[in-house]
Image (tube, rainbow, N blue to C red; front, side, top):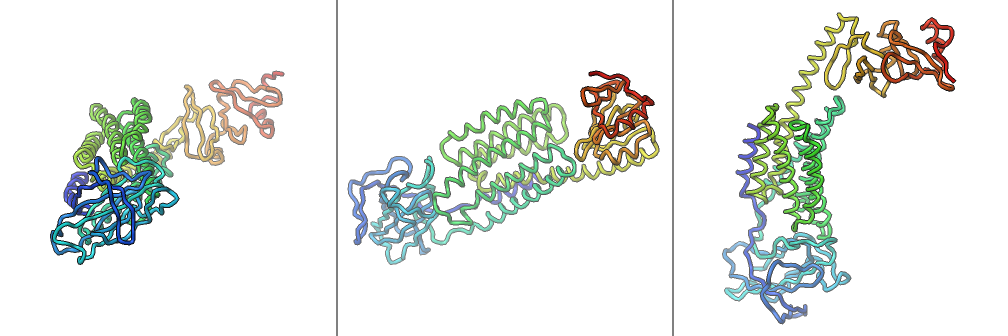
Amino acid sequence: MWRWLTIAVLIALGAATSAQAQPLRWDVCRGVATPAGPRLSDCRPLVGAIDPQGRELWLRAATPPRASGDPRAVFAIGAASSEVWFNGLRLGANGQPGPTAQTERPGRYQADFPIPEALWRPSGNELVVRLSTHHAGLRFATPIGWLGIGAARQPSMLPLLAITFVAAGALAAATFGFGAIYAMRRTGSSLTLAALSAVAALQAGAENLRHLWRYDYPVHAYRMVGIWALSLAFAFLLISWAGSRFLPRRRAQLLALAAAALPLTWFIPGFDIKTGVALLLGVVLAGVAALGGVLARRSGARPTLAWLAVFLTMGVLQPVWLLDLSFFVLAAALVLPLLIAEVVRLGRDDTAREAALTRAASRPDRLTVASARGVQLVPIPDILAIVGADDYVELRLTGDRTLLHAARLDALETQLPPSFLRIHRSVIANLAHVQRLERDGSRWRLHLAEGPPLPVSRARLAGLRDALDEPAPLRATA
C-alpha cells in the first residue's frame, strides 16, 4: 500500500518543471566586445551542442516577438561564464568570459538576465551571448544545460524541494533507526540498510544543492562526481542487501558483477546518464536476487520485486524525474517499511527472549546463552571452555562447536558449577573434560578432550593443580 501511494504522489508531481524557455536557433560567430555593443563577423549555424569548454564562444540568435505581457529574461544554466546583449544593449555578465583561463572570471552555474520591456521590438530582436569555460575541472558532454529566453517569473521550486527534503528527512531517520538496531543486535542487514539510507539522504542534498545555493560553476564538477559516486554506493548496497536476504548463495557473485560493472558507467557520456544507469543497474541486479527469493518463496521477496520493477519503470520512462525526485521518494518507500518491520520483529524477539529466560530459571543444568540470533539453552556438560572476547565470550562446545554469548567472564564465573575453574584471566575451563596439564617451555597448557590446548597463567597454576588433585604436573615436556 505504501509503495502504491508513492507512485501516485510521483505521478501527481510530474508537472513540476524548471525554466519554461523558448528554443532558439543559434549562429556561431567571431566577436569582439565594444562600448557600442558586440561586433560580430563570420557567423554560421551552430552544429551540435553549445560547448564553450576551453575557448571563448560567441552566439547569436534571432528571437521571436514577446508572446505575452509577462516580463521576460535570458536564462543561462550550465558550466560557463557568460555575458549577454539584447538588441545591442548589454544586459549584464555572469562572471567574466574570456579567451583564456587567466582572463576568465568564473560565473555562477545558473544566471538570469531580465530584459527591459522598452528593448523589445515588434520584429527583428537579436540576442547575443558570449560564453567561456576554462575552470570546469573536467570535461562535460553537455556543459550548457539551457540557454534561452523564458518568463522572468519562474514556477516555484518549493513544492518539489519540500517533497524531496521530506524524503531526505525520512531517509535520515531510517539511518538513525537502523544504526540503533545495529548497535543493539550487530546484524549485517541493519548496517547495510543504515548505510543505504544515509547514501540516499546525502544524494538528495547534493542533487538539490543548485536550488539552494547559487554556486560558481567550477563547483559543479565536484557536485556531479559526488552524485555519481553516491549512486554507485547506493546501487552496491542495494545489491548487497537484496542478495543477503533473498539469494545468499549467489550474493558474492552479484557483488563481484556489480564491482566490475558499476565503475564502467564513468565512461558513459553525460553525468545524468552515468548516474541513472548506475542506479538502474543496481536495481536490475537486486531484482535478480529478489526474483530468486520469489522462486525460493522467501518472505518479502514479492513486494521487493514489485518495488524494484516500479523503480526500473520510472527510471526508463521518466529519467528526469528519477534524478530530481522519484529516486529519493522511492528509496524512502523502501527503507521505512523495512524499518517498521524490523522494529516489530525486535519487539517480538525481546518477548520471546524474556519467555526463554523465564523457562531457563527452572533448568539449572543448562546455560542460557543470549546472542544476536535469540536465546539458546546449552547443556552445561557440553561446555568445554569459555574464552573471553571483549564484551562477549566464546563458548567452546563438544563436537567442535562454538557459540558467542553476550556476557562477561566475571559474571559467568559465579553462575557455573564447581567443575568450572578460571585458569587464565580470559579462560574458564570445564575440568570434567581435562586430559592433561603439560609444560611447554616457560608456559603451561591445559589439554581437554577436544579442541586446542588452553593457556594457564602462573597465578592460577597452583589452584588448578589443587583442583586436579595432582601435586605435580600430569605430564611435563622440555
